[in-house]
Length: 125
Image (tube, rainbow, N blue to C red; front, side, top):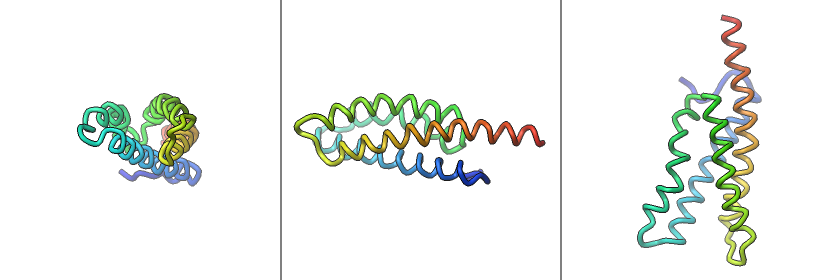
């Protein structure tokens, strides 16, 4: 099974979603490492488990997984908005905020377009 489809616009939003997803995971790992350098595994797992649970659905292009990704990104969005407007903001707070915005928008389009794409494949077969 391939990660992409035969539709160009779907491939673009899938690519954007995957890249922003990887950026968000990297930012979470970096932010947790910087904030809690000695025992960072538990806070890291608490932040990453929701994202990692939907990863198989993202890879298999299940449109509901993209809807859940949009829903989850709202929690990360609120956290990064608070961090961006705090006096101790860092560059990775901005990267996390921008990646959650891209995840939400691209994931929303990917969910809708994948649903239509697979329905059209069913109708033609």
